[in-house]
Image (cartoon, rainbow, N blue to C red; front, top):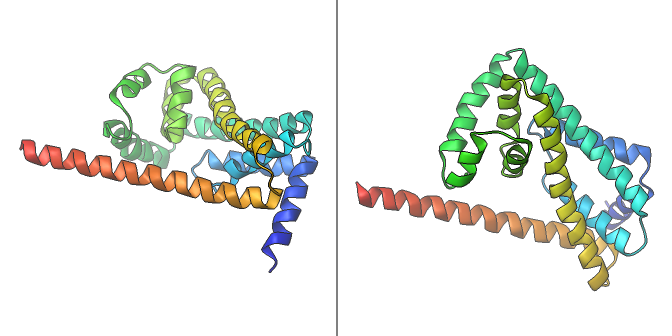
Length: 218
């Protein structure tokens, strides 16, 4: 299997910004609202799109078209999950009690100041919570509170912030580094792997240190 040839085909397909590509991104984002996603895929796509725009390989209009597809997918998935929670799906309710309360009690995962803000949900606090991996529990909470408007605005804000950050990163790299698109994909995956690995290690270290402090205090 020629990996480079496959990557080149994928890059060319993204560069066309066709309805098929937008639909694939729509489906991936909709499914992602339920916690199923392919690691690094969307991040790499946006870094590559930002790179292609900066190099003149992808038009700004095409980029907006792709962004619209992902936002629509996130909105669709979150609204479906919202209505499932509204009608009292027991598996979702059990998931809420098991996961959300556990995450909110973890001060290493959710700083106290952020946790206080999440006690009074607004589109901005929900958007911040979504960026902190609290997407599903917050959707279920807003479903229980019947606040669909807050959810839809928060999804939009979080999507623009998350996608925009990677697009800007790709565009910045594209204007400073002379690299082939295929190499950009490899650099992106390597960089994201390193970033997530360091983040995970820092969290584990912080939890270990916090546990040791609690043991010393007892």
